Length: 558
Image 1: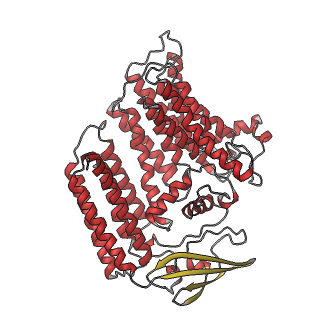
Image 2: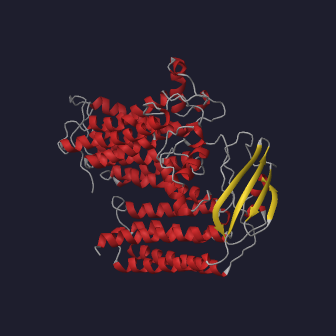
Image 3: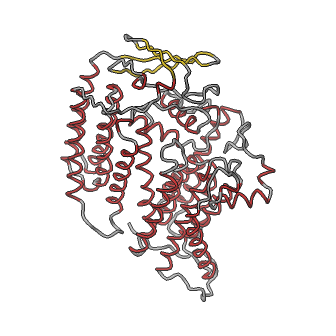
């Protein structure tokens, strides 16, 4: 087996171990079972950081661990399994939720009864005293209410069935092995070259913090997913996708999504982590800080002081504006942030047109209004000799294939050709003539810059964005005075202008808080960092007579 194949299969075996353990934890339905999932989740970033340094023995260790866990799952599956049916006696009529999973114990405690339904009924908007009847196959019948099904689990009592002790021990051994390997290979190096290790430590820190906020003992708690929350649509779409509805027809919740790519991402997380919502939210909390090391790849040639300061500002933005607000919700607003940085980095490295096209297609499917982003990349690449004509065709044709796929789905569903779900009826969005009024545009600009109270008094002004805006204006004035900019900074500025224009035309600005500004702030930070890095490399001074144009290709790291 070739070394790179062995490394790939080692990671896949670790993920497969997590899938098996998640299945066992949900089947056993014990409060302390998710600790096993936490052990493997902590091992995953450590193993990914060691990917270039993996050895053959790592593969064999993970193969033995996987076979052991599969054997435990087989032994546990030989026992009696119970399925559960929940009848909700709503005011307008009964709703039946059938859970196809099999559980080892038919619990009569309401909070320990798995509730995997998504409420799509307007007459039941909260977990109230609506009566429910829980029926276990080959077990008792329990009469309870919605409110009694939803309390948080993880009380002071600790129960450890023998099979759970075996699972916890096995997962702890796997974590100890990868922690030892990571500690043995870890070396203190320059900030320019430690991105992989820093990303692993940052993800591990995020995982630990998330586990403190939401302890593993509570991960199996029921969550009432109800209208009018966005997560109703995404969670319904993910479950529909897992049930074989690959085209998502009809659309989840009856509303077309602006972030269709988030549905398969959420479905993949459920495949790995099981049907519970809390593990998915914890993983999201751990993933979002990875925007910092990804962004730092744009500044590989900058001074260490600039990289540290820029990374600290980006980390503060992630912690304050993403983690504290959106990490605990099933929202697709963060996927485009990663793809935007990845697109800029691929452009900076002169990656192949196929790579740029794939990222552009994913960016379009992550936020449909980013439909013109691949064309912006193609425009910014004009005159660059690093790309052949084939590369330029790939930059356009691959995103066009994604557009054709989405439009074909739209035609099958509605018999219309439409690249974005604009002007959906009965959504409370503003009409187009109101959006194009100058007064509304001025208020929208104020809101997008952080003063959302001008559109909705329920939201607060985000004053901590002001220094970022000031630094962005300084960088822009510096470039205008010099009348010359690097290609990557030029692409970032064009993407910023395009995202700002799409946000101003959005019919929902001011409804969902500062979610509409996240991409703008990330692009501002990227532009500031790139310009400061260009100044470090000798950007022309304001006295230069050079015309405003894109500069030559910037040097970049590996």
